[in-house]
Length: 141
Image 1 (cartoon, helix red, strand yellow):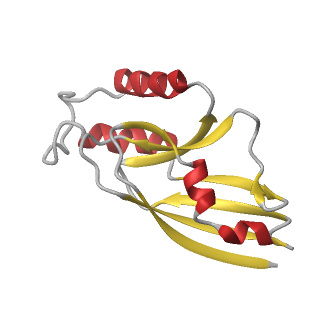
Image 2: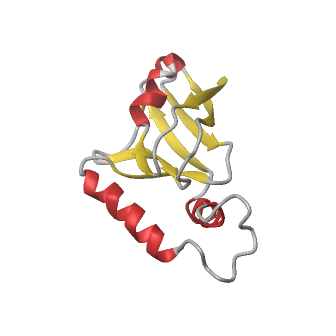
């Protein structure tokens, strides 16, 4: 059984939903050593999240952003955590709804995602910095 763990620094991106599947795979040459396994991908932040969804049509990512902005608006009168700007509390709520991790099967040295699936970095802040993820690989040769 193989265990491997690596922290990966993601580039700063604008607010929205961004495909990061290829970026993650490029940072993990160790994937090639795993015939059957699991990748657990965790983001170390409370105002950004991870999810898996369609990777083919960019309008899906635009619709995600539009929907979450409607569902979790800025400047709601009942927010108390407002000292870091109007996007901060909504960012925490969006991250809580989407989650801080995804798990992906590994088959023959590659992520075993569906034909139209990709891993998204969901950036919920207007002026975010680079983000950190922790990838833990477990499997057999």
